[in-house]
Amino acid sequence: MISFLDLSAQYKELKSEIDAAVARVLESGQFVLGSEVAALEEEFARYSGAQYAVGVNSGTSALHLALLAAGIGPGDEVVTTPFTFYATVAAIGYIGATPVYVDIDPSTFNIDVRRMEAAITQRTRAILVVHLYGQPADMDPILDIARRHKLAVIEDAAQAHGAEYKGRRVGAIGDLGCFSFYPTKNLGAAGEGGMVTTNNQEYARTLSLLRNWGEERRYHPVLKGFNYRLPAIQAAILRVKLKRLEQWTDARRALAAEYDRLLQDTSVTTPPTLPDTRHVYCLYTIRSENRDELQRGLAAAGIQTAIHYPTPIHLMPAYADARYKAGDLPEAEATARTVLSLPLYPQLNGAQVAEVAAEVARLAHRKIQEPLLTRR
Ligand SMILES: Cc1ncc(COP(=O)(O)O)c(C=O)c1O
Image 1: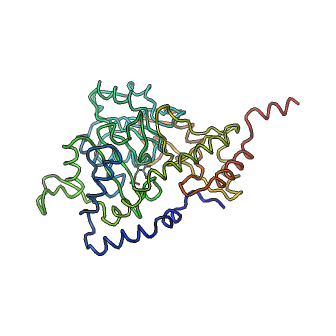
Image 2 (image 1 turned 90 degrees about the vertical axis):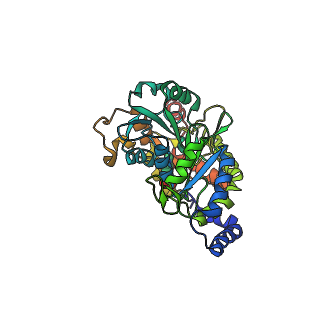
C-alpha cells in the first residue's frame, strides 16, 4: 500500500522539536498573534525574498485580504485561471468582483499569457495568477501586461512555497503573494494557516489591520476588518518546519526527477517545467488519455492517487456564470479530464517511487509499442 500522502511521517521526523514548540506556546499563554507569529512573519519574508509577510488563518483569507489591500472591489474584473482550487475564484467573489477566465497552457497547467491581453477590459483591475502544483506561472510577460494596463498582480502561491522564476521566489514577484499552510501543502500547519507577502509597506499595514478587526490599538478599529488571525501554536510549528523546507523541497524535486526518468517511455505525459524556474512539486501531476482506467488500476495495486482537479471552475454548479459554458475554455476542460497526481512527499523513498512508476508503466504502455506490435 502506498498512500498519497503521509503526514504522520513528517511529524515523526520532527516530533521532539514540534512538541517543544507547542509546549513553549502553551506555557507562554499567548495563543493568538504575538511573538511567535511575528517571528514566523520575519522568517517567512526572508525565505520568500519579500520585505513583508503578514500571517493569517488560511490561504483563502490571504487571497481575500490581498484583493482588498490592492483596492479591488465590486464591479471590478479580475483576470484569472479556470483551472485551480476554487478558493482562488471564491476570494474574487468575496469582494464582489468578477472573475474573467483565461484558458491555460496545457504544457504548464498555468494561465496562458498569450491569451491574456484579449481578456482585459476597461473594468479589469488585477491579474490573479496561480502557480499551480508548485510550478511558477510565466511572470515576465504577466508583469509586462500588468504594467501596460495598470493592473495589480496577485500571486496565488498556495502550492508554491519556495518556487522560483528566473532566480526570484514566488510571492515576491507580483504586488502581493498568497500562501496556504493547509496541512497538505509544502509547508503545512497542524490545522489552518496562511500568509500574505508583499514589498509594499502600505499594503503590509493594511493587511495587518484587516486580519485583526482593523484595530490600530485595542477597541480602536480604523478599518472594517476580520478575525483572520494566525494562532501562535500554528506559527510555532511552522517555524520548526520552515527550517526543513529547503531540504524537503530538494527531496520532492529529486523524487519528481526520478518519476520523470522512469515514466519517459510510457504513454503518460510527465509534468513539463518552464526553463529557468524551480518547480517545488506540491503535486506531481501527470496526464493520461486513459486517466480513470489508470487510477483504477493503480488503486487495485494499492497505490493511492488523486485528481487535481476534476472540473474547471466555470463548469462547477456552485460557480456557474452565464458568460461561460462547456467548450469555452477547452484546454482547462481537457486537462481536467486527463490529470492524475501520483504520491509525492519528502518522506517517500526511491523504492516507493519506483514501485509506483513500474505500475504506471505496466498500465500505460509505451506510446509506440502498440503500432509496432500490431504491424508484426
Ligand atoms: C491554489 C490554491 N489556492 C488557495 C488555496 C486555499 O488555501 P486554504 O486551504 O489554506 O484556505 C489552496 C489550498 O487549499 C490552493 O491550492
